[in-house]
Amino acid sequence: MKSSEDYHRPRIGIDLLGCETSPDKILTAIASHHFEGEHPPLFTIFGTKEIFERVSTSEDFFCHVVTEEITMEEDPLLAVRRKKDSSIAVGIDKLKAFEIDAFISGGNSGALLAKTTISLQMLPGIDRPAFLTLIPSKLEPIAVLDVGANVDAKAETLLQFAKMGIAYQKARGVSHPVVGLLNIG
Image (tube, rainbow, N blue to C red; front, side, top):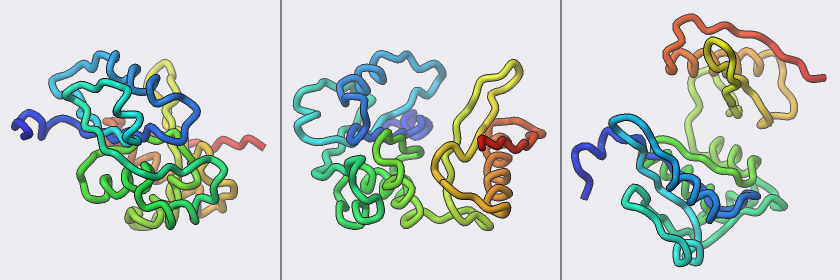
């Protein structure tokens, strides 16, 4: 049963399947990290029964067993439509149901984007999702997007990415975000 304190803790979903790093290393890294603050995160870990049988987890971990994995070689859209009990599909479904607050996956990025686009509602005026990363700088981390989700972007799409970046930075407490355009080719 959840304590009242648990309701203030961020709930993070972690996909253990489909990425290059072994599930054991991911779990060890999470378990060994000291989270500062009054409300350390709670983790929902998505993996197979075999993974959970060989690793130990803490009380801050909820293990959610899935029976399917989407590999890097699979067609992303077909995979998410066919593999409804995959870690990516179930993780995004949990996010949609507000059972977790964030979902992290190192798996098939195309499948992650396909499932996100199918299942989650976009913000008004936004047509497609984008990947965001923070780059350290002297003053504040710089939010950069899109870092790999889309291979082609029209001017309207770039404007939408800028709007998402501004919203993200404002949510982080940056009062006057600055937008720039970076061209890599």
